[in-house]
Amino acid sequence: EVHLVESGGGLVQAGGSLRLSCAASGFTFDVDAIGWFRQAPGKEREGVSCISRSDGSAYYADSVKGRFTISRDKAKNTVYLQMDSLKPEDTAVYYCAAGASYYTCHRPRGMRYWGKGTLVTVSS
Image (cartoon, rainbow, N blue to C red):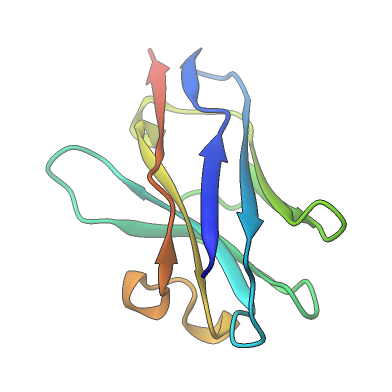
């Protein structure tokens, strides 16, 4: 079974940076996409970024393009989300998720496995 563990969340001032990590284990042949979602209080969970394990293709939500960068370390089975120029509206619980297809990895329903989340708080 796929197991995902997030780390790297915390409190940062607006304009600052954080790097989230997602350590994965138990991958099977049917998992190609790994991504990050976030959920702020009172809001729906939204796709932030995801990456294909097979070819490295990456997706970014419009709200984070140019500020966030997703990357993967195949040897460590870890996916990172580098978050720069953070804004108060980036405050949320960030979840790592994995699913079968890169083409649906931006939708919560497209992901089958989920981590427990890590809190990111950006102060103004």
